[in-house]
Length: 254
Image (spheres, one colour):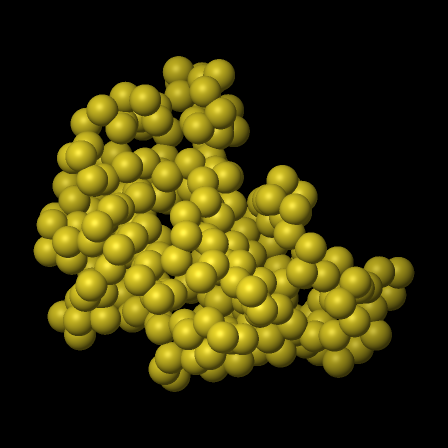
């Protein structure tokens, strides 16, 4: 048993979006304040992050995350990676390096984009994270928690979703391969990215996300990676009974 906390449910710009005057960005409903998409997986013997978003410090403080045993990366885009420097606070209190898991391209891009972490030189004037980049080539056990990577396509990018027991989390996705659908059988809970758009080259639209839900048939679905086109209230009213909009701070059990 464990819990999954939605640390953020917004798209790459977050909601409110900087400079936007729309009703959703000025909403007083706290469910309309969407930090960049990430989750925190907490079990009896492991505390795991999926992605290190650009909002990680705020997310960790709000959720009271006191330890990070490992990070699972979905892919290498900025909104999912560029909060990596915030991990050095956990290094400080934990006294060790943090393993970071991802596919080959993701690890290469993290090393390239954040070369100061891995260049072997002593940091001048500030600490830097101590990380161990680890290639995922199949299911892995972190503590007693079995993690199964779910290969998906995010436009032309090879990305991962992750399955934890009877729950799966897939954010940036425009196509689910046939073999990956097999890994999603028998789900109780699915978290799936969706945008309130008619079409998008690298993300599921709401229509395509709902079509995927209909095929997977989980007990319950939470949609995440949401833009500012609909409020939580109005967007929720348009969804099927077993499909819900996730919100920052939502906790589900696995």
